[in-house]
Image 1 (cartoon, helix red, strand yellow):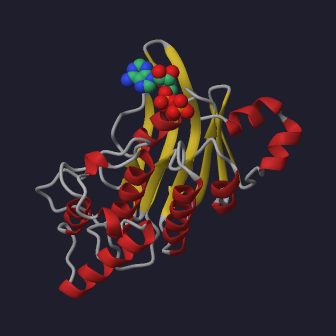
Image 2 (cartoon, rainbow, N blue to C red; image 1 turned 120 degrees about the horizontal axis):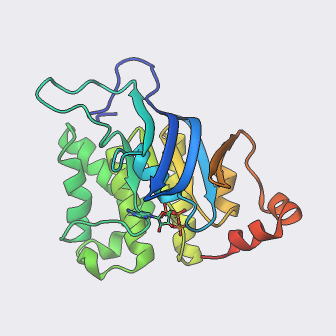
Length: 250
Ligand SMILES: Nc1ncnc2c1ncn2[C@@H]1O[C@H](COP(=O)(O)OP(=O)(O)OP(=O)(O)O)[C@@H](O)[C@H]1O
């Protein structure tokens, strides 16, 4: 991997949250004693609407600060002394409605590569692979703002895949997508998993994405519960009809 976060050693990169409390005004959103998100993890983040899934991801990405607690990172290449070594850019957060650059699909894909040191052939092979995986061939010259929701999400994930982040957080990556786009996005997420990218995925749809995950974080009653057991659609069905409803909405 050639990203600026590349490690010469086998130390897995990780983000560690300790004694976190998140409040908006006086209202507690959630609290958690400890969370660990590292390279190779594939975590399913579950929670009702408004429980704080996006907020948790933004905290781990360094985009917002928790009310209390600390977020530590480990294993990343230290930044040079003249740059602030903040959490930003370490665990990449992909918003449900992703931000795209003002330009064509091709521009969005190639721009991401400018920050990496690659040979021209590596560069062109990575772009080709991303285009094929996300099936963006016919859309390359289209302006990003003309894409449908599903196409935007495919482009955003392809762009993230190109830069090969060590830790990637995907916020509802397949919500409001047709089956074709869902299948493509699942294949892309699976590829990221094979590449060893740490993935934290929030979703209301438990089936395809759940099957890829090996850990479960559940925001319930303002607490984040962690487990190595990922619920299947069936177990959600049998144990809690409210959760089944949650699983089929949005
Ligand atoms: N900056 C903010 N100021 C005040 N309240 C906020 C702010 N950001 C989020 N909230 C509130 O925090 C709660 C959690 O929001 P968040 O978007 O994290 O939930 P979520 O679990 O991702 O929801 P959804 O499943 O609907 O996307 C919501 O009630 C939201 O209104």
